[in-house]
Image 1 (tube, rainbow, N blue to C red):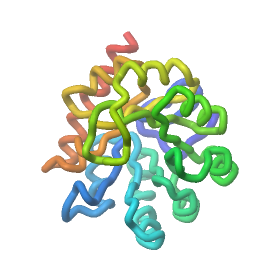
Image 2: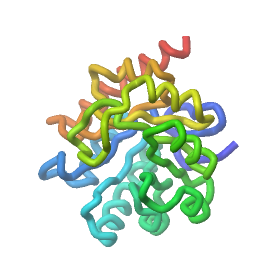
Image 3: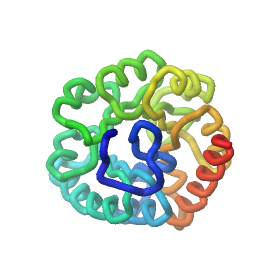
Length: 228
């Protein structure tokens, strides 16, 4: 079994960490709030994983933010990954990295990020997800499930039917992303997804910790219901 350096909640079968609630930081959606403040609130609200995402930040600033968030995530027993930048993840001791389809190829990233480091890959189709799983990804981020203004270049919404198809097609955890909130999260989890990744649902809330806590409660109830 793979041993991961965090402990929030029970691990999934196979040793994978739980991704029930996966919060992505976004400074643009949280005016006046730093990545560290967003991460702290998300973790206090029960997030199982936090991803640092800032496409416009310099490597120096990303390293500074990651170096602050990493020990905080460890304190809360949650996973911490860096979007796109495998180099930043390695330099700062993050638990792993998450890559898009145009980033460093999964196979190459896996050579650098040796397990137990986590490697996530975004996918919008069954074919992309299968390739990522074959090339060494530990989880797949699938979306956008619903239309979302958070990432304008994310493409058209794929819906829950395709999400369910990806879940059935790969042997690793699938995390749904894109337009997910308190109202539609039950519908998303009914597909068999391991968890949900959110940005605006937490980052744009007046009280980020309270928003994360409410969403985590709803997710936990849905997953328990699915297991019974």
